[in-house]
Length: 123
Length: 101
Image 1 (cartoon, rainbow over the protein chains, first blue to last red):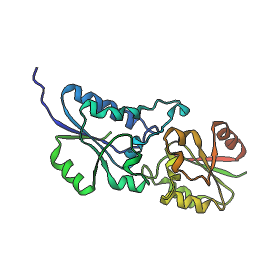
Image 2 (image 1 turned 135 degrees about the vertical axis):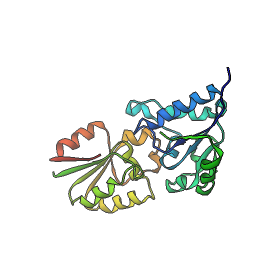
Image 3 (image 1 turned 90 degrees about the horizontal axis):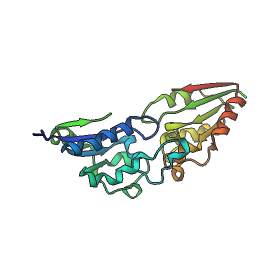
Image 4 (image 1 turned 120 degrees about the horizontal axis):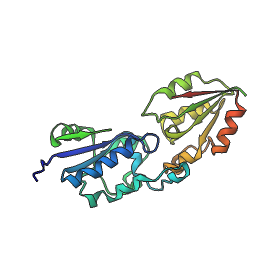
């Protein structure tokens, strides 16, 4: 079976738990590599909140689905981009995140989104 | 007691918090729940404005939502943390509730 291989960028721009978008985006993201697509992810704006450690969503009756991000390298999802001003505005540094990431700025992102990827998905 | 405002969206998600703050009066309450707790992240514009308002209003945080998101170390401790039982108590104690969706 021939699979058309595309380069996909998933964009997490929403905070976790308050809306379902973050969870659904992650489920979609984890499906892509199983279809042999070249998959990357970008955390921007409120999306960076997904990557914090010490989440305990059981107290609001939810599962900490964001633990799955630590396994992204195993799924061949790379690079894992984080937009740097989004971190700064929220008082975060890369030390607060649950996995190593590639920091990008907005200028680099313009280039990435316009040219490097076949499709960008932001739920 | 008078009016309780409820905010449930992050500052990036919606600017409605600004409308709420403009309309808040002394003695009223402002309760942050769900993604609204991100309005109380320290050193942010929203948290600073809420801190100023805290001189005249009662600002509350639904603490389980803070814990769930892993931000308890970076949230304004000046505001009153409440749990779900406290949430119910507040809606009873205040005469009216205004949810800014």
